[in-house]
Length: 146
Image (cartoon, rainbow, N blue to C red; front, side):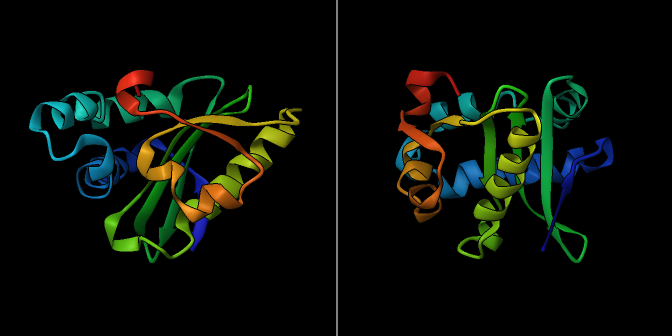
């Protein structure tokens, strides 16, 4: 598995991973409610992923293997994790942990000594977050607007 900085050519595939991850892996959050899922997916478009890639002060990273995107993560220069999604096909393979490690390196390079995230219920229960030095505040996306 390779972790690298995303480029605009990744937008379509990265968007697909984001959407599948939300739909298939975040059931604890959306509880299969179509309206809730639709709201969560509303900004998960290839156009928005391209915008996020180009946004100054943000780093979007891709986990890939054999040309296939396994996960998508993003963080800000201030040390906030803004995305960490894994393809359902790559679950429990250390993808999320590798993404967080890459983001932590980026945060350290930016001079941060602490990083934060607001997590979905699904991710907050993940062993990956339980292991990290990142302070996770479990918060339902509906409350946080994420």
